[in-house]
Length: 327
Image (tube, rainbow, N blue to C red; front, top):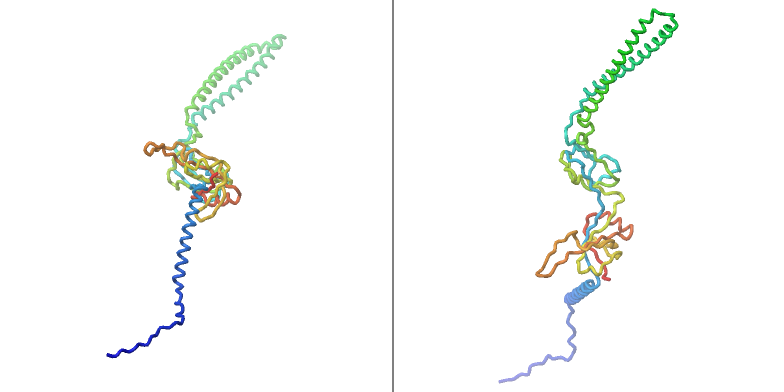
């Protein structure tokens, strides 16, 4: 059996380096970046939790609610939502709540006419009496001088006529007094001519501003005392009504500056104007086991600058986030 030596191909020369994979390097750096972001976020959460408080809120523009004094059907509306109105301008008309008949003045007018005629007749009779008395005084003078004995009889007739006229005047005066009493007694029993329920109600703008909302349409019934038109005055006050967890109450004070962040990330500044002890006037008391659960506290926040105020005005009823540093 023959044995042959095989040739060896082992070399001592350097073998070289393999090609580098760039994709694996990018993946590795991405892993490091994600890990760094996660750690940074956790550190930020921990920092803000111990140094800041956060709450929710809503932009509120002061609004004027206009309600009808009497309920009724809306005849016409002269404004639409978003329209500018001036103080005193007519906004709506409401139909009269009751149907009233016109005042019947026929009897009163007739009595007043008869009363006037009788007063004129009394004046004429008084003038006639004055004339007769003047003529009688002339005849009396002639009788004293015995110049005209023929008129003595006529003088006596005039005296009787004067007495009759006085009696007639007295009777007329009694009738006048009676008719005046009847007129005074008749007038209160008649329907009131200017009854508020008999005329349509006109509602005018009490201030200059913008129509925010209209609760009813034409021909609908507008109940008494319920909102019909809501106005926003041109100089209406603006604020944010915010709610913060009750555990942060010791970190909040009046005139404290806070950040007001809108949903799009826009950040403005506000100042705490008022702090309420609870989010409701009479909050319900809730218990968890034997421990009382307190409700959130409520804040009124005002804008710091004119720019912030204008931004808030443009975002009425928008929800915002409130952030502030714990003091």
